[in-house]
Length: 193
Image (cartoon, rainbow, N blue to C red; front, side, top):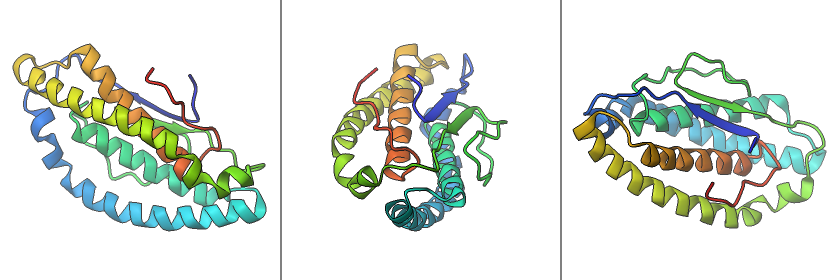
């Protein structure tokens, strides 16, 4: 499925055994920056909501800023989860296309014109089923992450099935965020595949 918000992670065959349990500590500076970016992203989201509601289009600058926030958040999440060893850059490139150079590639296809005003107006109500499914996938992903982190402690590699579920949780979260913050009118898939 080719959803307008895409995440691909290049994972090495082996990973440092300590990484999944302690790598999140190294990401603390990114969590501070991400906290501030999320506040700005919420303000931009509100402005975007009014812009789409009144004009039927999303201004490019607002869309690009939201893409940057979501990309930054997803890169920090994949790193903190120990999915790869590449420290996320403090990269604030505002573009829907992934600028490259990182193990977690996050790209968006953002329609600017012809946006659906009705789905925009009711977005926070209509996203409830997708949020419920995303929460279920996320809970399963957290359990898989915990079991996978223990497996990495002993083997130095992520078991493929557990890794796939953790990535599924990260992708579901990215898709819901893209829909929530108006980067797309396409509803997130309500499936566990």
